[in-house]
Length: 414
Image 1 (cartoon, rainbow, N blue to C red):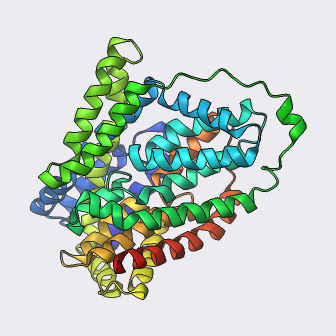
Image 2: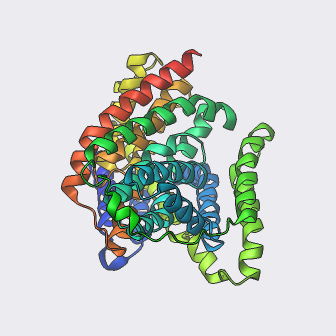
Image 3: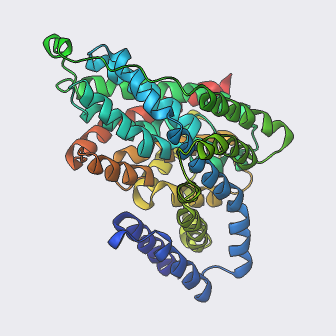
């Protein structure tokens, strides 16, 4: 029966990657979840428990997607593109640095989906306006949507799933992951600087002929609300308030001016919540439960380390990275959390977060964010190259995982 459960997971993931005729992922996930129940792979009580456990995380996802849409509608990303373009001063290396900062902050605060869906078009547009190759800057948003998503519990759906299991507060989680976050981004930047050296070659003559666009006025009110929302995430943990309540308040605060001033409409706000994708996550949780409850889950539990030594952290991150590229990082997280059980040291769970977040930079199928980035890039005339993505990933992914794990081990000692 474990083979059947694994086949169901594979079928759902293949459908999610291919998305024939643009059909939403839930079209495959819902029948697969029903099949898992009818075949006895998952009991009704286990399915209900899994859904109830995932529900706060999924509700948060919906609100953070709405928050990102409203920030975009109010001009946050247009302003970011303007700042990046002006700070570059015609130098591709400066623009790359600005893109790294913008992508890292966007991913950490608004989640990786905002980086790939909203920031990527802004970055491509800024590079073209400066007559620079958009290639390194577009790939930077793809990589940082994964690499920069380790900082906060709210930065990635995988983080939220692990956050509850760690038992840490929002601030403690962020404090432990701050150094790994910085180290992994620094390694990515160094790799990009060398890998894309041809695209980043500075041509002073070209820079002189580029007209500087008028600066975009900063959307102060929207930025203040985003900052307050981030602060709210940190404070809410001390009062045991679920993050989705904070995200809901932030979304409402941005929705009022955005709707009142006609920057968006209710139907677009509802569409931004992507309720079908949220349903997909819940159904996927049920399907994956059929795998984790069988021999595969038992085998996974047997190979995971039990101590948060450096070797234990590195082994956990490596297993998580491999699993992400085999079954995608979301189901990999669900499987690993089930395999670890309720008594796993927080350090190992954080190492798992490192693996499932940095590992997907290795292949196209590692995370849903990369799948989204490929579609966004192609829609804006900057399609991804399998060779470039794979070679870049083979260089950067092992280095970032090793560096981030070393930084995490050091943070745990302190």
